[in-house]
Structures are given as structure tokens and as C-alpha cells.
Image 1 (tube, rainbow, N blue to C red):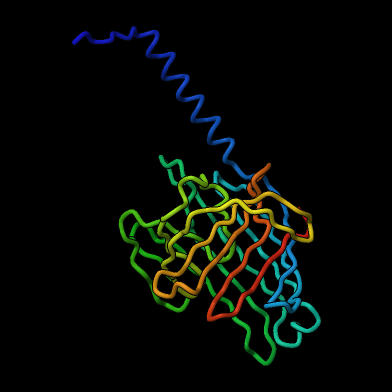
Image 2 (image 1 turned 30 degrees about the horizontal axis):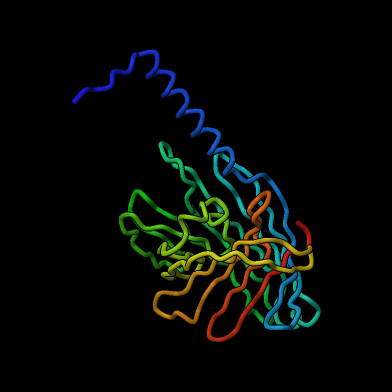
Length: 239
């Protein structure tokens, strides 16, 4: 068999080309600082508005969510506020979930303030109530508060992916289904989207469905969360 000999100069040029491709790909996958606004619904009942602010910070992202209840919803709860942080660890390309906190101002003392954080040195996720869950090798995670990691993940890598969804209270195992193309209509307009659903591993009827824009930034156009037969929905009003 005749071997192929590559000169040192050609090897250097090839390495530089691969590096440029990697840099361009990483930049293409980056999410710009932006603010998204959604109309919130519980079933068909208007529950108010949610504002999502995404900003770049220290090679990662911080996502701030502020919920403003409608007049009807305000009879039961006040404003909801959450902050979720994503980081890129040294030597790694992918962004990872790092920590989160949420606060709900309720009536009659039924509000709360909770948080979670990843302690990767100890291999666990810690919660404000003192509980902690072990991190298993190779596990993938999603934030319950907002699907930022889904925005960064190539669509062709989603089908069959198993993830652990993390909130400030607990973790839940989910499995992604195959994305499908769908035209979705929201207050902001009509868009071509990828409809991407994941179902809870131990309760398949509980699911999270995200409609991601196919053009421009992969903005979540609509988010539907179904638990115990009840569905809450966010619909984009201002891209």
C-alpha cells in the first residue's frame, strides 16, 4: 500500500483551516444579547406576560425571567423572577448549566425563594433546601426555566437525547423526540419552526414542547409545558 505523505507546510495549513472552521462554527452558534417578550396562558386563560433577558457573561450566558401576572392571576400570585447561569468550563466547547434561583411573591405568605447550583468538584447538584443529587458521568442537563441550551444544540443531534431537567426544587429525567418542521402562529407573527418535544421518562404524558425559529437566531417562538393534564404556554409577542 502506498502511503500519502503530507508536507509540514500543508499540515500547518490544514490545521489552520480546521481551526478557522471551528471558530466560525462556534461564533455561528453564539446567542446575541436580547430581550424576548411572551404572553403567558394557563390553558386558554391569560396569565400575564413574561420577559426574558439573555446576556453574554464570562464566555457563558445569564438568562433573567420576569413574570408579570394578569389582573386575574394577581389575585393569587405576584411577580415571578428567576436568574439562570450557564458557563463554559476551561477546555470545553459546550456551554453548561451552572446555577439558578427563583423568587415568587405570593399572597398570605405563600411566596418563596429557592436556588440550585452545580458543585462539579463534588459531583453533585445542590439545592437551597439542603438536598443534593449526584451527577452521573456523561449526563446532559436542561434548565427548567428557559431552553437556552436547546437554542445552542444542533437540531440533528436532538432526537433520542436523554437529559435531566433542573429547577430550583428538583431534577427530572426527559427524552427528546424527533424534531418536526411546523408553521407556528404567535402574536409576533407566523414563522417556520422546528417543533421539538421532550417527554418525562417516568411519566410520558408530562412533556415540554418548544417551537424554535428556523431562520435567524433560534428564538423560542412558543413554549408549552404539560403536567398532569394541564398545559401552560408562552407565545412570543416581541422578537
